[in-house]
Length: 361
Image (tube, rainbow, N blue to C red; front, top):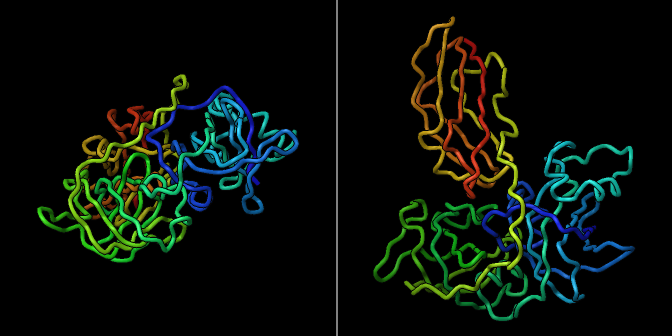
């Protein structure tokens, strides 16, 4: 069951992602703290707005203004997994979630676990635009409507999901790539991103942004829109629709923080060949990790050289992996620091973060 409520507060959104209710439920971590848009038809029941979801889960929409239509609506807001917040998190108050949470769990109920209670906050609703003319944005919000149908779309080349536009990769071939326009994105398979005047690499960021026109047959893979392409060509940029909400700027979201890490802070007897994985509370800007992560090692209180390392940000899990070129020193105290300069995509800096663990023999 999805429960929709009314409020006049909300959170500042990141770059919007057009999606579906099914993908939100399948990939809540990917969408957590992201601004989203979807098409749905809420119904008012006992004073709340509801949409069906699987048993054991609830999605709450906190609207700025109540919907004025009972037909298909385009709903925009910021998606959050309430269970990832602590009960005293300032966002609970900022998003006006406390009364709704209490109505769901009761006055003495346990705080919701992760992946059980979700919210779309700072939400707006407006009549949905024409959903019959296939564009990447329309397909992203209604992929089943175009399943098995021929389409031609234009969009920006985004490589093998290098910008984190979609929650997963259907892995049809190594040539698969993402095409993006406005706030929508879809996977393209069946052709290489190569044609007259262009030869693009799905694994290279340098090729991101090239406009392409692709024709083929639409399909849905694990809820993801996927175009089985027949032809591909270079294209001029489209006039993309305005995504402005024409609404007051909401209060800024709290700065990103570290959710958890592997190894955990203070853990001992870690294998010297380990890598480090750190997950954050919000999506992060991948390039800001470069030059802003420091690793130091000490043995018996004396500094020793730490091996070179690389950082790889994975938007699907909101995490960064630190992989070392060589093993860490044995019986060492290892300190991993995130220095000033690491930010979320909206420029909000990461709160100071440090992880300390020790290696074994």
